[in-house]
Image (cartoon, rainbow, N blue to C red):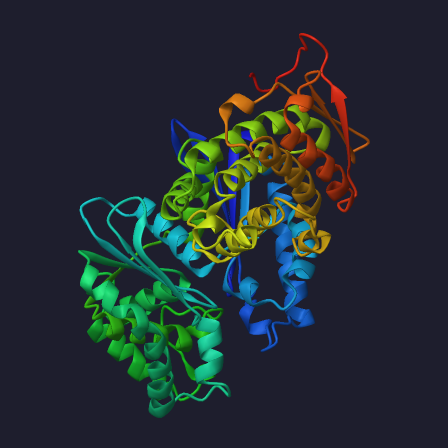
Length: 510
């Protein structure tokens, strides 16, 4: 069967890199391959966000192995995300350039809450029905995600910057383990959990579930100690493991059945976090799931390609929250869609770029909810920093850039702050959005016109309009004259032309 019918999700965690490859058969995804590398990216990151050379090389070597496996899968069927350690990188763009080259596909950096949502989505795929409310805890290498919900989407989602790698290094820097160090470090983690633990307790749950390597390792160790006990993790078992860790006196001295050699260097920090989570949320028992972020990522990818894209819901919610003018958003979106479709092929733009353009068009006026003065900048700030389920940081940064530069003189440096692979895309989408806004400025459907948009030599845009149309629309004529000057700042040229009678184009109808 062709690899074109396969999908791959790559989870670049702070402790391990995971890849899962699946094929859609009879309406369901069937996993056909898994690869895991314990890279310990968080362990190679210093306080200034710099990766040491050995860890960097190990990460790139792992990505190259993953890249060989997925090289024949279409890019539309691939999705790779970086989590907490990627969020902490001092120069993420510089590392991403070489990392994406090694992997052979874009790498998106997700926020902590988006990571939590993906974990919840993944765990939900692997759990039987019955529990109306479910709490999910995932302890990674660089962060811990805590999520609760009762439907497809979580109701509460939080991420704390404590993972098994970072916490082991923080709590036991020289490897020594004792009761005082454990108590002090647990108090630090509890302080971070305290800010939202009350919300989770009030929400409640019928079932608590844990995912990730740390939690599976804890269950394996308990299973070796109590082979006849029910699977899962309870308070008594957690206390027993904690005492055994303290008795070991050193990270290197931990020798428990069920614990792999690869997991041993970071298990103390992971168990300490789990100890704190049990206390903060008053958990009595935790079931263990073999599903995690990578399964959620795979499910999310298929949803994006189908008609269940969570980003649509996020945009609708934001438009409602900021009381956007839906009529104006529709006018701008309609023009932008028609313009995009006419020049997408010549400019190498894909369906994923169309979606981002249209979402930016829907939300281009959200800054007005704060102030008319500086509205584009207000809107850009919201888009870049808000929690938008389904969106990656790069996607939000691209939309924020489009909204920030939607009118007046565009600042090319704002585009230069985007990842290199998005800069040309941003320039081209920005041209379309700015023209769409110019043609919709009168906020009247009656002012719509047929048009033809084309490009030449990648940096020359020709806009053809009906004869004499601009003469009867002086505001648009003035705005287009300004656009010719403004777009030159982006290295682009705009030329106006006359639309021939009865043209065979796909412009908007009057």
